[in-house]
Length: 231
Image (tube, rainbow, N blue to C red; front, side, top):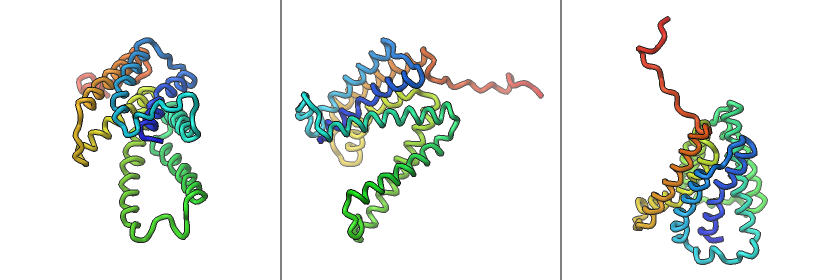
């Protein structure tokens, strides 16, 4: 599969999240939220068209191959995973650190077992000359992705809905383009800047709609010293 098709399937996550949020939390989609999703999805398309292999995006529309079905299933499972995480951290009062730590440990064991069954472990999947780079890259990826990002997702889900958080994932290829500009000296086109503005507009529409519906928890202002009750 091309990167374009992969991005396209994962861009469907907000729609799956909206459906699962309706089933689990009774969160309804109104016209403003549908408009926000449409605007954001439209802003994502130009960035998608810049991906390698984008010309093959609509090939085989009459059926889906097994890899494409697998990516679609992965997008659905990812969306449902955010729903379950929100249930744990919001309704069950479980710490995001505990929820993420347990899921990463169990998921990692499953992935390691799958690697042992599928990959070539004769005698070890990482050669000795590449061991140092493998350890450094793995530690950096673990800290950035698993420690920082996923735990931040867990805390964010205490206040925002899974639909809104999942929709923010449409900004991923845009940020990837900015990172390529910073670290790889790749030029940033006006398409990236325009798409950022369009997707951000869609995010604002969804945020304002969910704020009116009461799905987003407002931060309570702290009482001043003058207003604090005396003992």
